[in-house]
Structure formats: structure tokens, C-alpha cells
Length: 155
Ligand SMILES: [Zn+2]
Figure 1 (cartoon, helix red, strand yellow):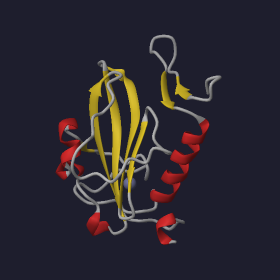
Figure 2 (cartoon, helix red, strand yellow; figure 1 turned 60 degrees about the vertical axis):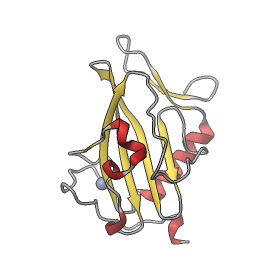
Figure 3 (tube, helix red, strand yellow; figure 1 turned 180 degrees about the horizontal axis):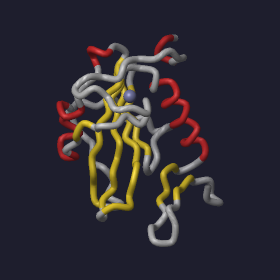
């Protein structure tokens, strides 16, 4: 954590550190939202952009940005039915940033394929062969099932 409250990750001398969260409050909001939604059905995707380039995801198909939970390396779009979460995952290979991107919905049948969401089109996401929320490979083309847990969506 930096003295101004931002949260960064440093891989060592050869790789510049990156700020992932703009402050403690945002980090807490991010973690709270993720702990709620990770129990919902979801699909796991990934995309790459050049180092330090902010992903451009504007346009049709997205719920509103959740600014309380979003920071430099954590981006959230959330409404009552769906959520999307992009997480800067790695920036140490070949000058590219790798982001994980999850789509969540209340019911498995409603989990969108992000490749069908126009706002993500320019990022050319692909399906991940590993879900870092579940810690196991997803079944291709199918959402990870919901798991028991508390969710604000149940309220
Ligand atoms: Zn999963």
C-alpha cells in the first residue's frame, strides 16, 4: 500500500509496479462486491491490451459503471440482474497487460458471453481456460455453477 492509500503490486526491480486500486475504500468496495458475486453463476474470459492502456469498454450492453468499486486495475459494471468485472491480472509479458473478465448473472442461463456484448468488442476477449474465482478450469461454453454463499442480490 502506498502512503496515499493507493494499492499497488510490485514484481521486483525489473518490472515497474502498478497501482491497482485508488484507495482503501475502493479496495474494500471491490472486495465486498466480489465476495457477494463470486457465488453467482459466471463465465470467465480474458483480454490483452498494451502495457498501461486503460481498457475501452463503452457502448451498448453494459450495466452502469460501479464507481465505488472501480479503480485503475479493477473495473465493475453492475445492475440488479448482471455484473461484469475486469481485473488487471498481469503486466510482465511481451509488453501486454492481461486482464481477466467475468460475467455474472442471477441464473446460469442468463450469464452472457462477453463476446456478444458490443461494449467489449474492441477488446476481443476470449474464453479463459482457467477460472481464478473457482480455482479450476471452466467447462468450455458453460458458466461456472453458483455456489452457496451470501449475496446482496438475495435481499
Ligand atoms: Zn468460476
